[in-house]
Image (cartoon, rainbow over all chains, first blue to last red; front, side, top):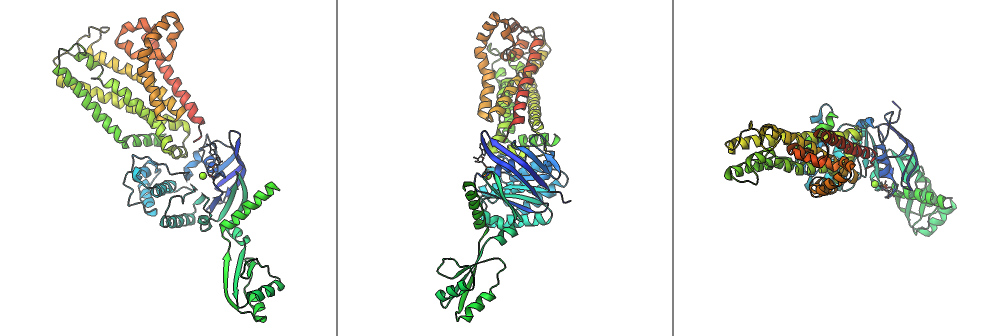
Length: 303
Length: 261
Ligand SMILES: Nc1ncnc2c1ncn2[C@@H]1O[C@H](COP(=O)(O)OP(=O)(O)O)[C@@H](O)[C@H]1O
Ligand SMILES: [Mg+2]
């Protein structure tokens, strides 16, 4: 069962002369939430469309061990998706949409369960043409998870959701993941993925520039300690002498690794009669780390 | 395939227009039959003539089916729902073929329904004006009933020749407007240019094989004198109509199978 649910090998895609995906290769482990992060125009949507057989591309894609392509994609019955903006038929109600796309046994139960999970009950029987963007988005997510797929592909699912709906979606994803569903979720709002993704694929100009786990990315990213002391100037001297890396900030700010202990720092200061009034931790968040990565990538290209 | 057929039928039945069309056709059919009762001696459109076109329904059907076939495909592009349909497990071919089949079913329903309305209108309003089993003096010795059935089935063939063009344009341009225009032009503007076409046929005999000439099939069935204009037999017209319909549908299918969305 260790076969990846989704494996992409050497995927290339061009629109005319413009190459949009370059040799994309990656694999998604079952039961993980994989974040696909990149700026607008990086190729997230195009990559997802290629996986779903919506657009042509060269390379190999296999889902649950079966290869799939533009022309032959029977295996997609194991996949649910929401791509770009939610698509709805204005002349039908939300419930009609669920009825239309529900397949297999226990259809009725799954429809009811999905309505409950996404809190759609209030408007599900109204015509979909009156839905707000957020309501349409939730209906689109409902359609993606309706048939209990093994793999769910969501393209910028947080678009248009209010904070409450956002939180509900996060909880839904976490609970489905625990039940074994794999998620591939794209976003340019990095903070959203920080809380749910296990793995990250960072895509820039159609190339995967980094494949990592969320834990590793956060550990590798910088932490800082910001100290308020009785004598900041002296503290700065003492700490520099003791070998700590300080930044240029007015407060003594120490660049530390994830594992650095606070105690020796306090000791060295108190030996020199500097009292520490306050310590603030500052973790660089995902956004900073990714931006740093992209910058690095940019420099390498230019250099 | 069964799922796709079911999905297409479900969407069709969820559209309010589907019901309005039925109501409209019933009212218009019975209304025209009633007018024939009010003006029994008019010479412009006698009761048997009106009956042979199911009291006008045959022409309305063409409009309605052109609109239905143009939207059944292009709405998916317009609403973006084509993505949701394609990333199910089914191939593009089965998706399009399901749409054809549901539209075929819909057109058959409309013919049967308007046929029943026409019979009802005949019995209710103009039963005294002619008998179904009497021979129609203008046609090739058919009874009014046979004449009516022949006219319905031949106009059905012609309708599908037009609809194949509508489907073709809907796949190529993904726009309902383009598809409807193509259908209307193919069918209605054709009557305007047919005089020119018939002139060309007398000059260059091979022109008779052009697809527009096959739109004459239903006209020739009800008016055998047309044969001198089309230069084709009824059977040739029938087979040619079917052939062109299949050809246009096939081109549309081929194009749809290659389309990224
Ligand atoms: N149908 C198309 N024709 C031409 N170029 C396209 C098409 N779709 C996307 N692109 C281009 O491909 C690139 C990637 O787009 P996309 O996958 O939508 O990016 P993202 O989803 O990451 O914002 C962009 O530069 C975009 O302009
Ligand atoms: Mg996108």
